[in-house]
Image (cartoon, rainbow, N blue to C red; front, side, top):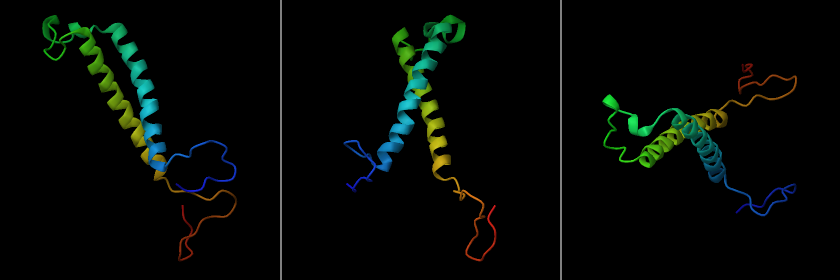
Length: 109
């Protein structure tokens, strides 16, 4: 493990991969929990289907809740992953009054 910077006061410094996993998984878990509560406050999983007959996948309400939770977790994790990707691959622009130039001296946007 690399030596932590001088201003770091904690016990452990996480690797970039662990940070990325935590950044994606934890917020998406919280969003999925809230989305599940809101969704199933209005929808009974036993009544999802044709003519109020539950689909075979929903053997019980708890199964419906679990499937719904994991669906919301997947969707929110994909959104968090896309956000992380866009943030990590963004072009960094210098701060201040000077404009960035490429190796030929052309001004970058």
